[in-house]
Image 1 (tube, protein in one colour):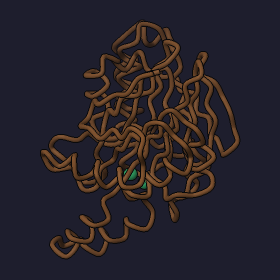
Image 2 (tube, rainbow, N blue to C red):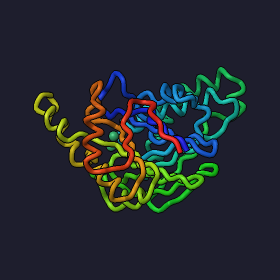
Image 3 (spheres, rainbow, N blue to C red):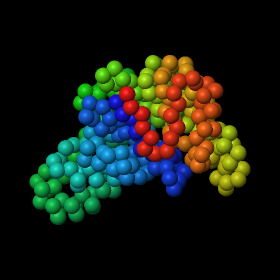
Image 4 (cartoon, protein in one colour):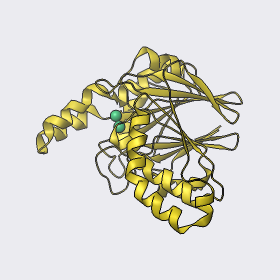
Length: 280
Ligand SMILES: [Zn+2]
Ligand SMILES: [Zn+2]
C-alpha cells in the first residue's frame, strides 16, 4: 500500500501547498481521499492521471476538501478512453453537493457531447454517488474500507476511512477532534493520516489578521499536532502522518512540528511537503 499526500494545505491559500487530498494505492486501485485545491495537478505529479482514479472518498463537505472535485470529474471523463463510471463515496449530503456540481458542469458537458461523437455515443459523464455512514463497509477492487464517525462539529456528519489490503491498515481521518469513532478507526493501524493545526501559531497569528476571530474559531474542531500524537499512542499505530497544516509550515519548520508530535508519540512521524509518501 502506498499513501501519498497530494495536498497538505487547508482553506488558507498557499503558494506551495495544494488543498487537502490524499492518494491511497493498493491492489492496482487508486483511491482519492478528498479533492482539494489543485488535486489534478498533484495527481499528475504522483504519476496517477485522473483516468486512473478508481474512486473518490470524501471525509466531509467543507470547501477545502471538495473544491476541485469538479476538475477530477471532468478531466477523468474527457481523458478516459471508455466511459467508466466514477464512484464517489461521502457522507450524507454528498448527493446534493454532486447534483450542484453537475448543474455547474452541465453546459460544459453539453459542449463536449456536441463536439465529440464517441463521448456522445458513450452516454455522457457517469458518476455513482454513495452516501455512507459509520459502520458501513465496501470494497474498491481488493481493498476493504470501513466507515467511522468523526467529530468536526458543527460540521456533521463527518467520517473517516479504515482502508485495508493484504494485512496493511491505513486510517484516514479528515478533520476531527479526538473521539471514540476516531479511536476505533485507528486501532493498531500501520498508518494514521491526520489533518492538524498548530494551536500555538493560530493563537499568535489571530491578533495580527483582520479575520482573527474567525481564525480562532477553527481551534475547537480540529486535532492539534499534540492531540494527533496522543491519538496515535492511544491506538497503538505504527506511523503517524500529518497533513492539512494550519498555518502552512515555513521553510525548514518541519523539525518543530515533528518535535511537538514526538513529545506524545514514539513511533514514526511523517511531516512533509506535498507528494510526501509512505509505503508498506
Ligand atoms: Zn479542512
Ligand atoms: Zn473541515
